Amino acid sequence: MADTMTPEERSRCMAAIKGKDTKPEMIVRKYLFSRGLRYRVQGKKLPGRPDIVLPKYKTVVFVDGCFWHGHDGCRYFRLPKSNVDFWREKIERNVARDARNEADLQAMGWRVIRVWECDIRAVAGRQEYLDGLYGRIVGGESERLYVESEDAEMDIAAEDQETYGDEPRS
Image (cartoon, rainbow, N blue to C red):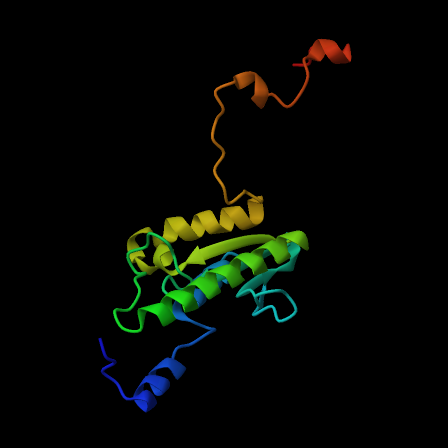
């Protein structure tokens, strides 16, 4: 399928796509600021230039567009019908770069939170999502959910009181 735009029109259209201060990013930043969090934007000295850097919590937040960052399974991500090979390779490179940057940040001791455009696009669930984001930042909650193991004995983190020889405390 041929492109419906001239190369000049396509270039102008692509150049108009913002890389920072996007609407989803501004929604997240305004919310976090309203909750009292102070941050830096576009962390130039950190791998991947995170959109939001919260040094106090040693946390960075990326607000990613579902198309450009290949949000797998998202209804807003689909490859264009024209120039498919180019777009597939482009998105795959973006995803690989994101993974490298995330690993580098974690190796430096940063907690990485990725916010997808689709998570805050719909107004209906936006407040709950942003409240959860705030909780993950200030509470240090992990991005991953813990699954309860079948062996409950493995989940115990402390020894019985008898081991310490202390009397039971109330």
